[in-house]
Image 1 (cartoon, rainbow over the protein chains, first blue to last red):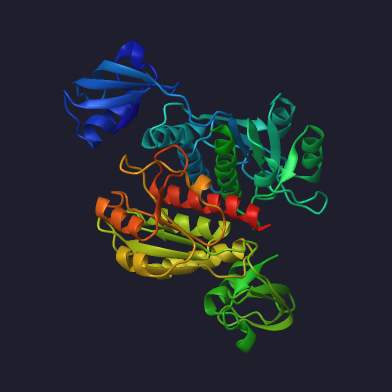
Image 2: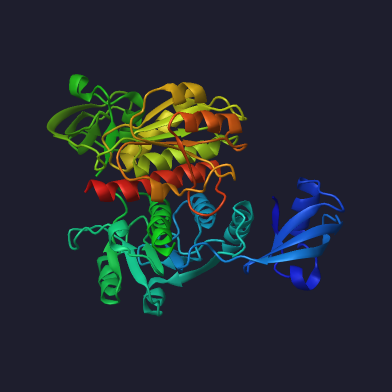
Amino acid sequence: MIQFYAPEIAATGMLPETESGHCCRVLRMKEGEHIFVTDGLGHRYECIILEANPKHTSVEIIAMEKISPWWGFRLELCVAPSKNADRMEWLVEKAVEIGVDRIVLMKCSRSERKTLRTDRLEKIAISAMNQSLKTNRTLIEGPVSFNELIEDRFSGFKCLGYCDDAYPLKSFAQEYKGGDVRIMIGPEGDFSPDEVIVAVNNGYMPVTFGGSRLRLETAALYSAVAAHVVGDKLDN
Amino acid sequence: MIQFYAPEIAATGMLPETESGHCCRVLRMKEGEHIFVTDGLGHRYECIILEANPKHTSVEIIAMEKISPWWGFRLELCVAPSKNADRMEWLVEKAVEIGVDRIVLMKCSRSERKTLRTDRLEKIAISAMNQSLKTNRTLIEGPVSFNELIEDRFSGFKCLGYCDDAYPLKSFAQEYKGGDVRIMIGPEGDFSPDEVIVAVNNGYMPVTFGGSRLRLETAALYSAVAAHVVGDKLDN
C-alpha cells in the first residue's frame, strides 16, 4: 500500500507537485493505477490515477475512509533543537512513525540553537506519515519560547526531562498514568535551575527516562515510546 | 563527567590509541586531570592522567567502582540489517544509549543486505557507551543466520516483530511480562512465512509494536524502549 499526501485532495483531486513527482518520476506509477491519498486530517482516499503528470497528477476518488489515531490521548513533545540539525530531523521522522500529535521546537535559556528550518522538518514529517500509513499529520511548530509554553494551558500530565539532586528521581514510565501528556526535553546544556523552578511551579514534574544519560533526541524518542507503552495499554 | 574505554586499563594503565587521541587531541586534556575509564565489563576506574600522549596516554588508577546495569534482565535485539547502513549505525547508537545487552545482525531469507561492517558499529557502540556513562559494553555480533539464532537456546521471552492475518495481533508491551527477552526484527521485505512458522514452532511469539507500520530500525528501537518500560518497572 502506497500513500501520498494532498491536503486539498477532496476539493481538487490533484496531488501537489512534490507528491506528483514522487508518484510518477520516482515510483513510475501510471494512469489507471490505484493509490491512497491522505489529507493529513484523518481521511484516507482510495484513488485511481487519471493523469500521471510529474508536476500535477490528477486522480479520481473512489472511496474515503475516516481513520482516527489508535492512541486516544494527546501526545506533545516540546524539544530544544539539538546543535546537530540531523539529529532533529531524525527525531521528527521517528516521532511521527511512532505517533506524536505535536512537536514544538522550544527556545530555552541554554539553547545553543534557537532556530531550525521547520519547512525541512515538515517534509520529513509528511514522508514519515505516509511511510507509516498515518492519516493525521503531526504538527510541527516553533520556535516557541520556554516561558510561552509553560504559560499556555495544557490539561494533562506535564513533565520535563531532568535529573538533579534538587528533585527526587521519578521515572516517567512510573509516574505517567495515561491520558493527554506533554513532555519537555531541554537542550544539551539542560534546563536552567530557574526554568525548572518555573516549570515545577506550573505543574510540570521533573522525570527521568530509564537509567542512563541520554542525548536529547534519544530522551525525546524514549519518552514518546514510553507514553505509548503506558498510554495505549490503558487506552485499549 | 567524561568516560573513556580501555579494555586493558587495569593491567596496562593505558588508553588505546583512539581513546588517547580523543582525550588529548580532541578534548585537550592534560597531565594531572581526572578522567573516568571503563573496561566495558562493568568496572569504572577513576584515573589521573600521568602522560597526555595522543597515541598512548597513561593514567594512574585512584579508585574503582563495580557498576551493574540498572536493568536486571537480559535484553537481546536480533536485527536484519537495513539496506541503508546509516540507519543501522543510528540504531546501534540509540540501542546502546537506551541499554541493550546484545545486538545480533541477522541474515534472513529476504535480507537485501547480508553483511555490515561490524567494526564501525563497534566504534559507534563504544562511543555511545561512554556518552551514556555505561560500563557494560553492548555485544555486537553477526552476521548470524536466522536458523542458527532460532536453534540456539535462549530461555526467556522470545518474540519476532510480525503482523499478518495468519497470526492474532499481539502487542509486545502487553505480552512481555519482564525478565530476559530476545526480540527479532526482520528485513524490509519482512520475515518469510516459512521463517515465521519455524520461529513459532520454536517458541517465538509474533508481536506488534504500537499501531503503525514502522521502519525496521524504528521497530527495533521501539522494542528496546518498551522492554525497559515494562521490564525496569517489574524489576524495581
